[in-house]
Image (cartoon, rainbow, N blue to C red; front, side):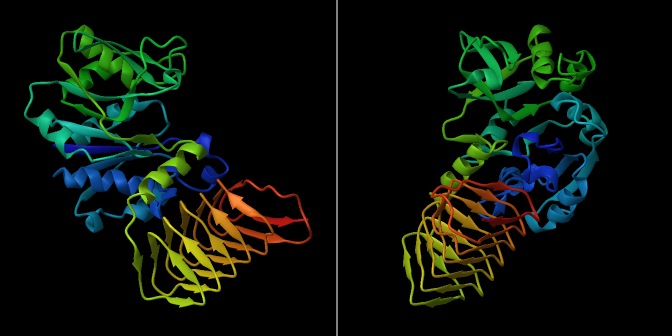
Length: 354
C-alpha cells in the first residue's frame, strides 16, 4: 500500500502567511503541519509516499527531502494547476499503479493516527473508505448522506447540506478510483471533485465504506483553525527543559524549551513550546503559545499565539493574543498605542507601531 499526500494549492485562506510559504509548512507546536501527516502514514506501516506539489514545490522539497528522516521514501508528483483533489489523483496514476493507497490532505491534522483505519481497509473488500466527522457548518465541506449504514450521496460544499457529516481529509482507495476520475467532469469551480469521483463509485455499485472520526480533526486552512490545532497539540505537551539558561524566571506547568535558549526575568506558563536559540527577556509567555527558533521577545506579553522563527517582538505595552506571526517579522513599539493588538503577518514583514 502506498501513501499520497496532497501539498499543492495556493493557501489563499492563510494569506498573507502563504504569499511566501507553503500552507502545509506553517508550524503547529513548532512542527510543520505536513510532518504530522507523514509521520501518521509511516506509523501505519506505509513507507512509500508520494507528495503532490504545485507552485510551492521547492519549499516542500527543502523541508521534507527524500523522506529518510521520517523513515520513508518520498516521490514528488507535479500538479501543474490546482484543479481539484480528483485531478491530483489523476496526475498520480503512474506513481500509484494498481496498489491500494491512502490519500491525506497535507494541511489536515487527525488525532490517533491512521494505523487502525489503514488496517481495516487493507483487510476489507472495500473499494474506498471515507472518514466522516460531525461539524457545525457542513456547508463549508464535502458532505455525506448516510442511510441504513451506507453512504448514498456526497455533495461538495452544498448550500443546503443533507447532513452534518463532513468528509475528513483522509481517504482510502483501490485502483478503481482512476476509472471514476476518468468519468467525471469539472464542477462549477472548474475542478475535478473527489466527492464526484466517490459518488461515481457509489452509483456504479462499488463498495464505499465509511468510518466516523472518534477524536478531533482539524483542517488548518484558516487562521482560527490553525490556532485551535496549536492548542490541541500543546495539550499533550510534556514538560522538557533542555540545555538552556533560566535566569530569575518562573517556568510553570508543561513547558518545552529548546537548547541554547535563554529566559531572563520572565514567566512562562504552559502549555508552551519554545524553540532553540530563543531569547525571552522581561516578558510573560502564556498558555498555548509556540515560539520558533532564534526568536527574540523582550518586554512583552504573549499568549495563545504562533510566532515563527527569527522573529523579533519587543517593548509592546499590551498583550499579544490569538496572533500568528510569520518568519523574520519584527514588531517594535515607537510610541503609546491602543490597548488591543491582533496580528496575522507574513514572512519578512516589518511593523513599527506609532
